[in-house]
Image (cartoon, rainbow, N blue to C red):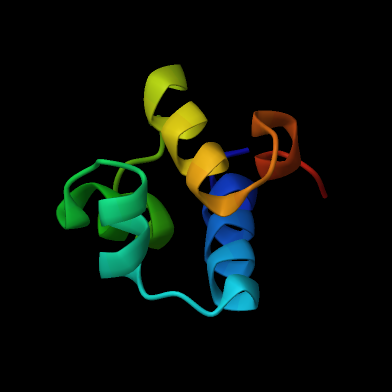
Length: 67
């Protein structure tokens, strides 16, 4: 599951054309948090973190879990 979320966040971020740094600022999260989620180093981000990322990417939390 976490790998799919990591992949989806990376794909959505790249599709939007923003850097990890920009996403971290828009989501009000530490850059390190974004990097760890995208690389799979943090396989279980909190719901609050996922909500912030989804909002910054302009998608729903459910979109982060889609195949």
